[in-house]
Length: 461
Image (cartoon, rainbow, N blue to C red):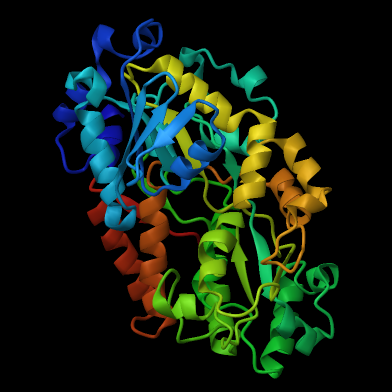
């Protein structure tokens, strides 16, 4: 099993290298460091963007100043946070992080990673107990049952290893909603009221009938077949790869996505010119000249993607319930095994993920749906959390019920590759470049190339 953890974590290095760098660190790692009384002078935090940095600078009370270029944040006690940022694209962030983790045991004190962030798509890779790179929170003196009691349960599960030991924490939840154009709703349904529109999209069968109404008026329901993928994948009943196995098992829900996407594309409910997400065509589909009615997005998707791509007046969009509850994304904060700053790390994790008032400030300033149940219940009932971009609507009224009903799909260390490569392979099928069987074959080839320890792919009957 250890070799399989190694293969997933650091394909670019040998298993022996990882075992020396991340596995048996002896007396210099784990809880021994957490008990040290002398803290280092530098806190190194690894991430893929400035999302966490901006929030920490805005609400963490120990911040004194930040350098003009954003690379160094100085705390009131003189400790410096050094932000090490590498882009997520093409796996660069994980590659750089993995290389640093491999060298953690031998690094000088102020060069050690103290905190690193992960996303839901690959968090399981880093919380694996055998990988031994993310400390159990209890080793920092954080009791998840008491200190994090107000967090949404699914976020705690996501940040835990297979034995249920929590090895990370997050300030945010990412409940997905349906975000729609008010003007198109009025044209087709005669109203843009979120409750009324919610009835038109309340489940997949109802949404399919609504898609026909939209088509009759010259509109697309969604931009791309990729827009619905996360709803299906987040509701899988089994992981892509079960613990201890080398077989990718395709969940029946994923094949439902393939079948329904092809049907919707052929029916004209989706824009055939938009191929995937986070590309120029998809971004343009969010503009005022687009005929796309809606997107399925979490709060960060509205703030980071929809808002910047919208070129019309504020108030043109609103949110309502999705056809099915789902979660998309989430940034998890981990204490790196071997940190020489356990007390600072503990304080940062508690301040940024456990204090309701701090998280409510993040919600107000950044529109994040944050990770306290009681706080989000308050936000849902408070007009102070209304959004100008959403025409004065308080989106938390729709975020909160979704978050309360999310049951995160079982995770595996192979999730990111499976999610990316499956969509890529079947995108070619949707576009008519390959037939169905060839798409399956292409996925099998691609996933084995990405993860050499995968031996087979099992398809549902």
